[in-house]
Length: 382
Image (cartoon, one colour):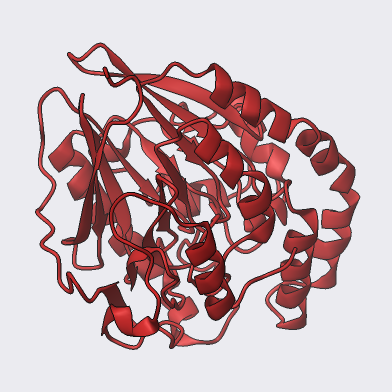
């Protein structure tokens, strides 16, 4: 896949943007910077200069609201991320545990009904099978707080595909831990919003199998960097036919699912970002193939990880929420439709009522660093 530089992404997003609300930025000077966001691993925040430090209230329980939390790129347990000698990877397990504890407190505070796991669930080469010790060391013993003993709707990231991705599906289908929900590579589910009679629909896609070449190129980079050995590539290539079969009908399924949706709120979840100013950048294949469907079928938001950042981007009426700061820290530059960006280990909370969805980005101190309120646009009486 073609990758975009931050400058190219700025131009692409400016051309595509026709959102109601904040106009696309025309220059990097339109943004407020706190910290060195372009330096990998440095904590920082970027906002619009017109609203440099927006107030973000602490999310609390709201009646008649469906609440949930989400995080991406969280798959570092006590030792599985320390193949890299740098301090960030050496401490990634501690970072993940900190994020876990902060997320548990927020989940309890808002009354979270479920968790969205946005991929890269197990670094650096997924799990080997349903009995892999990483299930316990990375997930079960790290997210065992009472408030997180709720369903986890998970999607697959590229690092999950570097191992046995099917095992994450089998783990779900076998009911080995009833929290883990991943019935297939892509799937959909609905949840009722209390009291209102309204429905939220989640559509989970596998972005990795939509862009085979991109995942393979990144794997080769990991091998060249000494993080993984060549055998992982051999095994990855050996499973290519499985991914190809799984990918064959995904875009058709996605369009059919979105077209048939009568939900009051419609959210799509994947691992790769459509738009991003992070270290990996905008995913052109998704901007070409998935973005038009999000816009055509009035999707409210697309949630993802992959870039080890937190971002809010608004484009053509669709909100793009990036949260890939679950264990590692990347870098970020603004693109023209960036409203917020940060490098600060954390997660998101979401609270959906009858008329609005409030998304709050939580940082490493367990405090909100940015909040966005989205008005309902589906099934609204004229």
